[in-house]
Image (cartoon, rainbow, N blue to C red; front, top):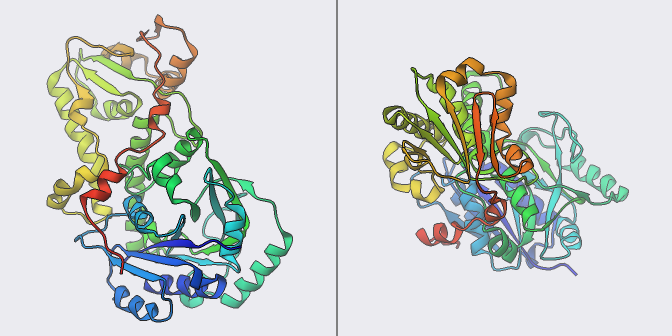
Length: 433
């Protein structure tokens, strides 16, 4: 028996035709009358809202919400907005640049066997990215007007006849129980504004003991990157080059956010500790080097207060500059809404205290750092959490570094649930009609 599902779709600028094609596939390939479809229109330059109002006449379970804010809020928040508004126990997040395959709902429900499971659906993608084990690379078109709907349907028939076993993995699109999203995970960590929120969530899913499975029978065609980079991102014109370069800069900042939180980049949890870098400034500094070191600790204490203040200001500017350009946020708007994005207080993170306390304190002089800087020393900084985990409490020397492990308290479990999601939802009401 097919259980009712709430399909949640975010749409934005230039995505009207993608969204309409996705709705057609849901109408053709699911028992649509059983389900609810929520579409959050984050930005709209094509009268998408009015076009979808016409489609509502054909799909009674379709509900729409147009972002009331002057700028997009992003998928890191709007997914939770849609899940919160869902009336059904099972919620499924679909990106607007997707087309669902035959019996999508039947295969979804068959594989989503418990509230402890998160189900991803196999992606079939055009050859715009390298192949990988969790997806199928096959070209049915790279835009809605060029999409070969009949050929895709035939391919899905053949794929489902293979009846491939489910595999371990997680990626969008995904489905889970609404209670799992809010009660166990707490939604996405909204400090990630352009990327890396999925990697963060995968780690937290594992910490929560969730079963991450991918179905091959519940599958989608994915045009790829339309939501994150915009339409025509794959072209070589100046506009596409600019957007891709801007996204790369934003991604670099997202990676730094990830390192500040977890101490490494990956998809499986590793021990993370409260590490303080205590730097004695005994000569002029290169701020690029300080900015490189900063993400690998929880607190960066610098003896020169003016250097600490300047570093905090530079890092804070970098942290939001590219994301704000990416989403076209004005400075005034960012100041008004930044509290909704789980921001880091860099002036609290980068300090200039005479008395340094912490579970782990790594002390070094700047002159000795630059004199001994090598790939091996960089690796020590980058893997400091693993070094702490592998050593007993006490003090030892590594080159120019004095590493004092005063207490080993693993913070990893404290990051499993994102605690700010409900506060963010309460900050503003969103109505689906």
